[in-house]
Length: 481
Image (cartoon, rainbow, N blue to C red):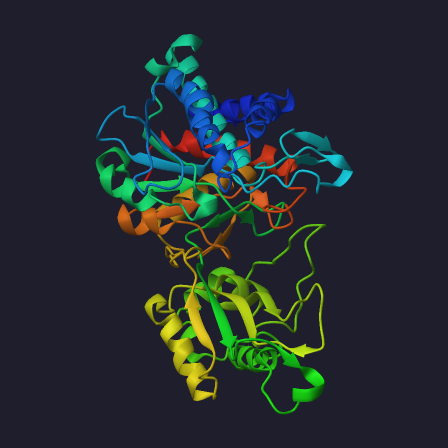
């Protein structure tokens, strides 16, 4: 049976993507971007953030027919943002893409085998470098796939290769690339408000985060929220000799440890009633029922007896809340002395899903501590680190459409997650811009993002380039929601 013309053209575009990848095209493009040290936590890198947008991304977009604007951050902190759009016909669907150009600190000197975080290096199937997984590798794949589809469309339309701005994609494309995601996305929501017309779209299709398993394409439709806070017990002005005063005065470390044990039990199950979500519905459980959580060879094994009893691992990480103690300090851990310390502090985090009231998280904790006799424990909200929880229903038309496109390319249905286990600023798009949000991640849970030895798996990157080429091709065909 002969394939229909549009099917054959789609397959040729995907074959072009495979050849370009195999010839080193993606590696070379990504290597150039990894070499730009866009550390948003380092104020001395402020000029580098703007240079990445101005000198690397904008020149890649303009020949494709994109209008490009680079705007200062309205928050007064954080780096600039790049906004781009390519409008063919206002009656066509418009797709908004998103990515972030900034990375976590490079941590030079801490990588294995003396690797330089700013040099893309290959070791087997792994491409090492800061930003390979989060997020330069992911937005580089998407921009390359869009370019490859435009080149394929141009050939079919008889448009010269050096005039891609005259070719037709069959849909409108917009893009927002920020440089402050790793410091909490300052100014992002204000830019979405101010540039609402420019960013107006029918759907957000973007890439960040990990697949549920390295070899299984994944869609996630929102993200867990995150709220960081400190619990502090401050009892007196200074320390006192543990021999003279032990058993006579309270130890703040012990008080805080028992307070923390009242928040979650010995297996990490949450004891604050208001933190236990109401949204693990039969539909969500059905969407998660066939998923296996797998971080790859370097990921830690899932512990079956940790977390909320009665839930599968997928339900625990994608459908439930988790309470974490990120740091705990009392006395002087580096140089302990025989003294009862005056103070103890724990830096904590709640990851939560839709179905938990974010405005009541800390008030509920205050009520819980008071009810359990821990009035001396102060609750202090952190200045940074807050993300709301968001979620799109798994049976939304855009979800079904994207899953169908990936199935056509790969021959298998993707995993569909109601939300990512981690957090990202999805509410800027789902709430501020009112868009359905479909995320197609190109990394995996064992990628060491935010740590030394961050890497991208080459087979996952190749597969991602193929399926994004198919997806962008399908956006220009009939049947789009």
